[in-house]
View 1 (spheres, one colour):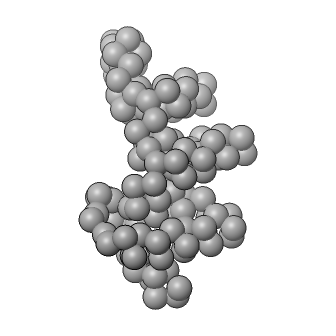
View 2 (cartoon, rainbow, N blue to C red):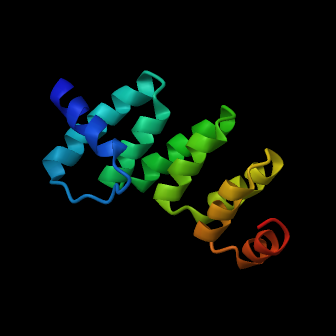
Length: 124
């Protein structure tokens, strides 16, 4: 597992996470991601599940992050899962922080044209 951890650390530092991997490698990466979860390293786990394209795990972890008041980590999970409903929800959370830049990014990914227009007209 240590070898997979080293490989994953390099991959998750890259900006582009869309990578084609074999099914065997996907399974090993997800085992490592579970280890990250157990150690509390949720953001790295999210990035690994983004690599393996496991949208269910991405949403599960993001929801845990929201419950633990970690909206930035939750954003990444919902973003990579392409979970428009929760991206819209997190957009409003970012407005309350306030973090208008990430709110706008959330609303764009959620295709919430009304909020995109509102923010662009009033804040940017």
